[in-house]
Amino acid sequence: MLWLFDPAQVQFLNVHIRRTHIVEDPISQLLHHKVTDYKRPLKVHFIREEVEDAGGVRKEFFLLLLRDILNPDYGMFTEFPDTRRIWFKEGALEAAATYMLIGIVCGLAIYNFTIINLPFPIALYKKLQ
Image: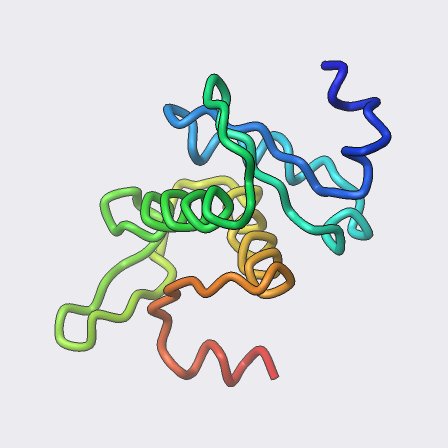
């Protein structure tokens, strides 16, 4: 827990992720930050891995997290086979915190100049305008 008090780390939004908990760890960490913290550069640390995040680790984090959350088998989204687009699953049992995490992650990806694949229909993006 000493990394919480390291002045060099304060300039970043640090998340420490276990690969076996790729969805749970970001939820428990990102949802407890202040909104202003999301405007810091994201640094991802996979626990028990000695790799410096120069952007590749962050990209892998987004890829793994979104692959799991957006997968129709996870239960939050439905895929339309003809268009390969996804939409929010009606009656999904996931907590609102998980949907909030998706919004935070999308914002972090944009803020950190990381390209991610979000196969939502155009209607969703138009609604954001």
